[in-house]
Length: 196
Image 1 (cartoon, helix red, strand yellow):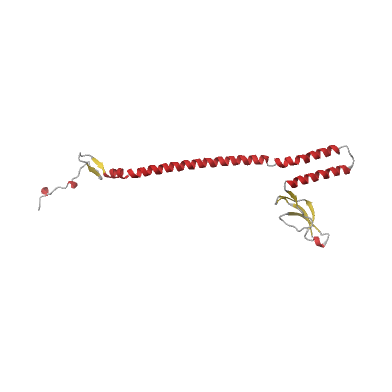
Image 2: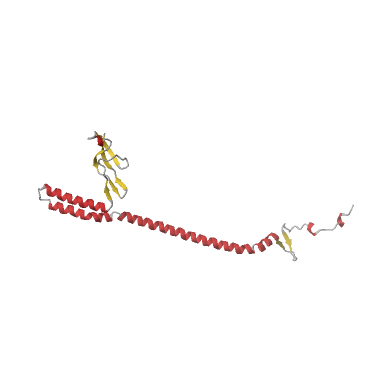
């Protein structure tokens, strides 16, 4: 059997108690972390790329924050404009109706001392005509319902009566309350009486 003391010694087999796995001994005896050295040399190129992506990320965050602030300003501005619009939405109509109100005042003063019913009736008809003309200019249109077919989307039946003639059976005999369109939209349904 060979002498165990005469076996050649391998430097790698000697165990240094201060040696940590992954470290290499320098010529001076100092140890360096090979993983850290490899990482340091390999990270030089990615650091340049990483700083570029960080700059792009910062730029995108800045754009996002500016866009979000701009959108908030837009929402605030449109809300304010909508509130102002609601406050003044009827201003044009009210301005158009003021002359009719003035006519009512003049007719009341002119007919206050008269006992002639025809003068009062005539003044009311003139004012009603002017009011209808003003409202028509603003888009209000009266429904023509009497004698026509009943349409649940346009009319509201309040009662049924025996039809005065056979051609009015199932049709509108009378209009109790006039219906109106504003443009193409029904703003008030006509209250009608149907013939049976």
